[in-house]
Length: 268
Image (tube, rainbow, N blue to C red; front, top):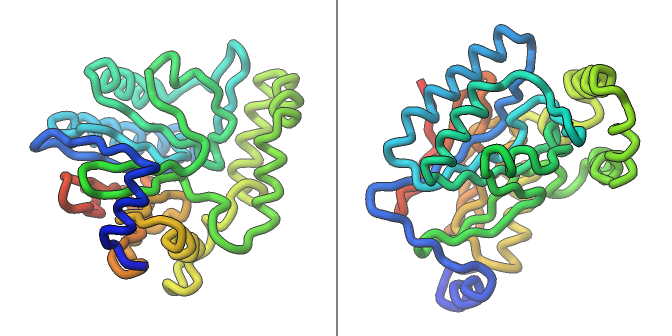
């Protein structure tokens, strides 16, 4: 599919443009999994992310967090998991300064409700979303459950996000519920999806296949996802790119867009 005028005209009907101020950038980050493998190592990684957030404050226009900020998260009506005050405080500071923060739920923090929206002011998404910045079209999301295969996980996710599952889990005492959730999350056999798959080539990469299928419907310049924990920048179609953000466990990678170019970068 070409990226010509017909595709642009079609895209104009489903995505309104946001003009970026000169000198400002979009930043994208994903898969921090705070809470594992233990408190001290998680805290060290959390402090690293906070330093990065402080560093990008000078030129960030909008910030995208593409899921799995936490390795497990569940919101009771009056209780949320303790900890993570440094990163939550920094995000609140950024939001209070006028920086828009887009937050996509991942497969490890899919049981979010409205806490981050009310307390910090993030915009919360539960599915991939289309955006347009200037003349570039983006499809952005966490990435779990997209692409062919992985039917067992897709079925499990439908169960987990059902109102019944949320209702039933909420009746567990928070001490028990959060302990159970953290155990299931670290076991990584029920809710990880295809994140454990290594990269074996473009033809077998699930999110590349998903991107190529979406290009048959609409033109996107960039497909930006997390979930796979692999920093990837792969051409798709005739003029598009699939970018996976990697993670902040072993790679410490992120992406930036300055209005012209999208770059996959590493925070040293």
